[in-house]
Image 1 (cartoon, rainbow, N blue to C red):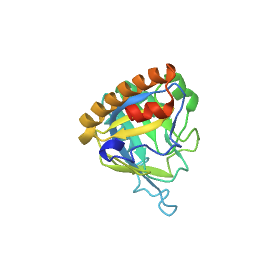
Image 2: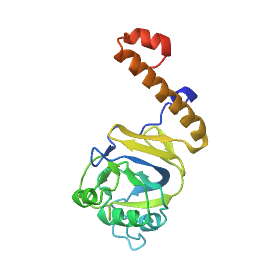
Image 3: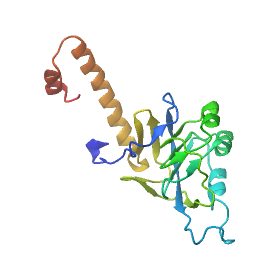
Length: 200
């Protein structure tokens, strides 16, 4: 992605997998959260969680519930949401914030990425205002259908409109890295290997 000018595609490094072996690949289903203002809290005009349940029920097979927006003072994901997402065949959840019910999510083995565990409930504090629309997380614009790739090294977003070029170049780089690794194992200095192959 760097080679084609996409230099801000990793989500913030605070977004980590719930378990170190969790891996994730799927299509983005972006979800926008907003904080509930103290003056609006308890208003009858606010439905619980906003459109969160609607967004959750709209998840499709292979999609990632990727959520950003409000301040990180409450959990954006929990065990019941995980159960529903699994039933729908979703690929995982990525949160610009916290998850809760950590033991329950871990027992389900559902790929979940976020800042860590924090039990404070989203209800009364934040609500989903939109989904299947672009969202910004850190320096990354996440659009519906983008490819989300995550493991213990972080989460990156491969824009759908560039995916063919991205994956061709990624495979080329992996092949070159394997050649360089064999050369280094055989004794070639790293400077020489980089000068010869342009990969390190």
